[in-house]
Image 1 (cartoon, helix red, strand yellow):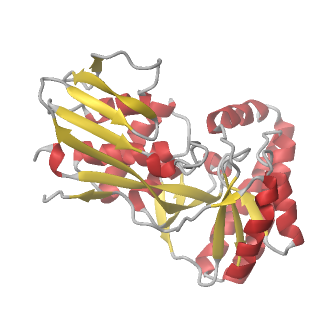
Image 2 (cartoon, rainbow, N blue to C red; image 1 turned 90 degrees about the vertical axis):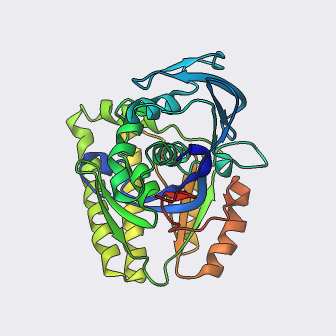
Image 3 (cartoon, rainbow, N blue to C red; image 1 turned 90 degrees about the horizontal axis):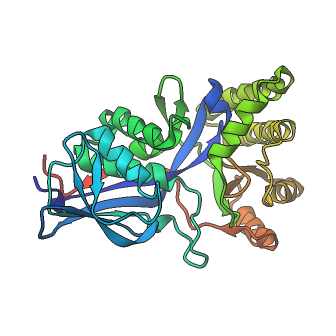
Length: 339
């Protein structure tokens, strides 16, 4: 089957609990979102291929692929490492068998139209999963090992893989990094979550490196241990399906994340997150940064959807914007693939 006959898409994600802790043996909870990376192809004349990446960089770049998966660029990339994710995935899956193909890797759904900034919903992981699915024609749980390997190669081994797992499975998941184990979770009846975008990017890798350096000091490990314990308690509470009790546990977890941030000086609650956290507590709501923090996305939670809408308007003064996002979207899909 020619690759110009089907399309692969995969969702982004939001980490609802277990950030940082997931790298140290605790579970993370993540939900897929309705922003999707899309990989498609069309036939072109020539003995080479072309790459387009709308949402990341404008332009078309010609390349050929060797049998070992390495690429030869016929047009100079805009800068070193510009296409590192694409190259990592191709090398991980063994390259492309076809020539005369224009590949389009589209992540425009992850861009804020007004500012042109990425929203921080896991676009690189979603694209990595969609591209891996496109090239291997796999989907479902069988895709996870290949997608994890490809993205770890891109990140130099960093990261937990929760974003990859969520893009593969969709829905809401619990994820254990050391086993790459995924547990599908039911959404608790009555739990309402609104995502707020800070308007600022976050740097995950730098924060992880800073944390690892800080943990060489044994005095810094207590706050991490507490965070891990609360992440486990959060998952246990989620499994009960009791939304009221879960909100209480989310509040406890968010406080542990706040204390962890102060202890490790990571800036998780910077970029306005601390102000929104305080405002939420004044309103009887639960708020936490999602993922690395220090920008990107936060989640405000309640059982009252009207209260969330009112709060979203209030925090505009902090530069935060409510996203029109739905959670629990389907995982990776291959549309048009007949076998």
